[in-house]
Length: 392
Image (cartoon, rainbow, N blue to C red; front, side):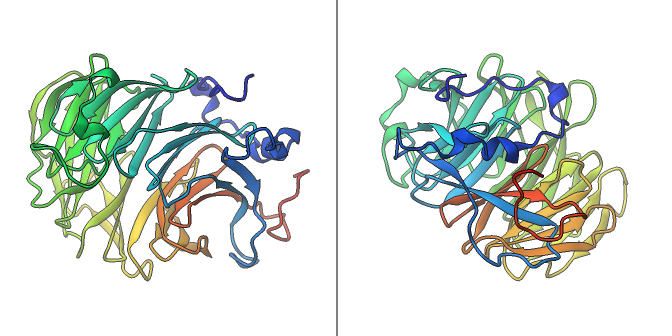
């Protein structure tokens, strides 16, 4: 395989495989960086004392290559996508441990990256625009640009407002703070102030919106399959509230909330993750809440007050969904049992804020303001120390 071309996405059956990414990363190809010294690389972690001997996670590798804070990470078992304040999105090959491509020409920080394994498209968000990429080409080809106002254009039709640097927005546009995809990548949801636009990606056309009723911008979303061709979309706002919607595939128009989660947080919602009827929310109030979406009443199951000592900015599930990982502005990650909400581990993972968390079959990824992405693996109970063993 040409190491400048992203590997093909794995079929669904590979999602749950117990693949040893670390063996691949420590193979002979990972240390051969001399051909392109400017390319980002995934290197073995050599830091000290970020975790104690009881830590259930071990940091084994770090991805270096962004020149400013990393704001978003999305990963499969083969590739990783990252977005940064340096106005680029990068694609990394987890087989070779090298950056494949850097996606340029963003007007400002790349605040969100997403990838769908079914339609094999990547998405990067900057200012009020979403760039849609086909990463199988080299270089990756931007095939569409979607705007917060609901318009779509080809990359050749890009306007000055799309390519111009700086914080100013074109009239009628809002900053897009999050996007999410339906399971099979046919529908995209994008924030636009206090509403959410619904895009049919088969036509790259805005077909409707969620009339959320939020009183402030929507900071984050999550999407869960709620039945055949049915999506459960959950929004978290700066107004402290969380709302849920049911959106059928291909159905446009205006969608109103199905439920509002109460009581609200005491500050803006920064992160949401959902698995079936189980929802976790995290806020600037340093609290994590667990919700049962199947209950018509009393949906709040548990509130973990002061779960961190700072804003909680990222959440993720480990592959088996039995563990919740949270990351905060002070650089700590914590691990919680999803059934009991008991604390499993507390790790000083980065020297600066953690902005995003993602997982694949064998890794936890943490994107940080220290310009790096940490690679973490679950330490088996038989391991006496956190040092990585190449033969394990």
